[in-house]
Image 1 (cartoon, helix red, strand yellow):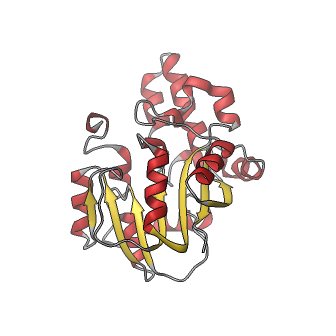
Image 2 (tube, one colour):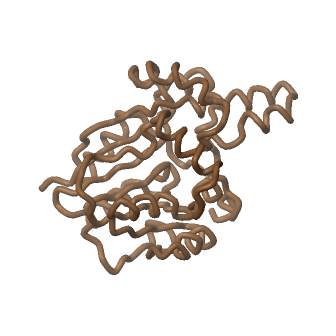
Image 3 (spheres, helix red, strand yellow):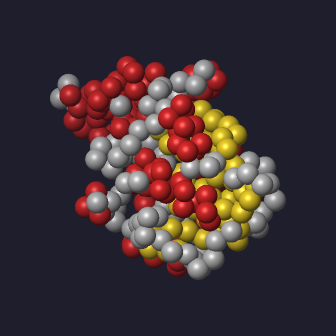
Length: 255
């Protein structure tokens, strides 16, 4: 599978931690503050021990360390994992399935757009359960295959992201998987974004022969400065109805 995750894979580039406070970084931070899509939404809790699965180049680890968390990461890409380690954080290089961490008992485990990449997601959730303290939390995001976006666009839906995404989930199927692996589902937050819809339009344009425009429209849906944010007013009611293409899930290990 490494063939499908080259060093220039979008999420690795998009998670490079910024070491300056220049205008571009300030603009992105301002946009994130007013366009809260709930992409990395976690329960309210005191800082403790955090593990991020698929930490990429370390931006989220840096963010959480900055507010008091003791952070650890797991990352499949050696190049991205090394970038995160250069920031000073302990990061295991390899898959979740192969990881054997020296210390566990985490208060919070996060995985942002990771579960759909796992070869054995049930075993992965069981492993994360074992690594979590009683009463600890699991917070993760993934595409919503029950969304109106998918029903309308089908094979052109950007979030299918084949062959990188191995499984696709609905709220019902993810709830069943969590129950099977011991977790208690607490909430599913439908993200306030139509970025996948916007990027899917690029696939439609490509089919029509507008290749140059298509490449720009697809772009990088994770980038908060892209034009699709004009759809934010529509994303709010769509999220309230559970119809956006991404969801953030909270689950808890029983005390």
